[in-house]
Picture 1 (cartoon, rainbow, N blue to C red):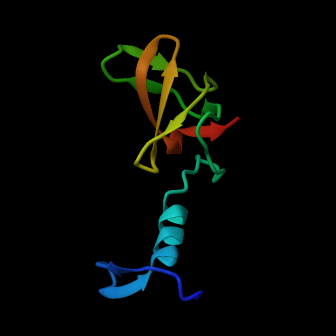
Picture 2: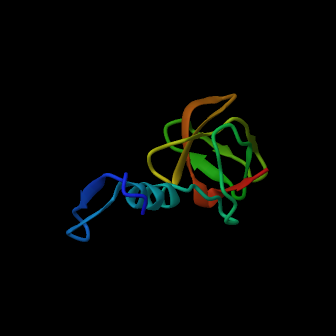
Length: 99
């Protein structure tokens, strides 16, 4: 510890902990991974690994469909993306693989 670190109260552990330690844990927990365990980032392209019926759109996205320019969400199990026929599409990371 460098002596300059601020301390924050961690409600989970009930202890005062260095802010840098808590930030590092949050960054690791927020890592978004695809079905194969690859780390995903904003702007990545992914491939569907299974046919998915899209609720409300009345269509099915086929396995092997490429989705370009994904955006990460607050939920590490979901990504926000667009398909040429479907706007505002949210996919679960368990159904995609990084391209």
